Image 1 (cartoon, one colour):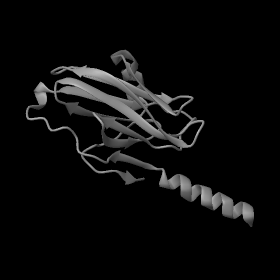
Image 2 (image 1 turned 180 degrees about the vertical axis):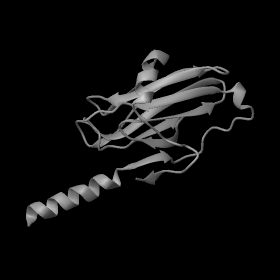
Image 3 (image 1 turned 180 degrees about the horizontal axis):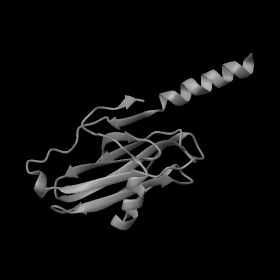
Length: 149
């Protein structure tokens, strides 16, 4: 009986982590063609698969992303910080990794989130790498708020 209870409790806990989608307001762009596009892909990986990571731009939480998902959004031109936040790693605390990047009109900045020893890393990557990762991951529609699936 104890084993059954533990399995049910674990399933309930993990289903609570099954959220992805927008949690904050996306940047406001008057002219979408004048903004820079950002593509974020979280690699599909067994390590950390149950965790939902938070992606932030310039210190503001934008969306949750799970293993094997990707999304895109437009940012104003200029310098920005993109970050991934997660709970876990070697010690059960919140961790963050961020990268500074310059958004230019009509250009695309690609970022990949993957597990690390501390929790998760976010790194820029190329359009060639993006093509393979995007085709094997699920798109998150940021026009809708986060929901469990």
